[in-house]
Image (cartoon, rainbow, N blue to C red; front, side, top):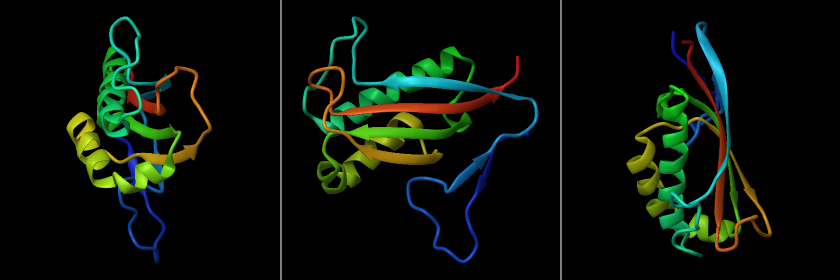
Length: 136
């Protein structure tokens, strides 16, 4: 059984996320630490470029998820930390394209949190998550 999406009846469907996700039997939870747009030496790529960093960050998150035995479809919750919410809004189409390129049309439950800064200088987005991957 796979993960299940829940959206409250009577409300319009959310765009780009799900209201809630359920974890089916035969699955284990994997907690993904906050990922940023870093290279193999963990140096920040594309300092200050939100759209480019979203793409790299999601590819990094996906690589970690795959190392844990999961796929994008196994994501049930993401928390996105951004230093500029207005940039996220104004670049929403490009962010969405970067999202679909990295994860496909996977839209788990999600929270976007504005922050004044991130640990890594030059990073403008950090994404952490929870996945329910098939049990070994």
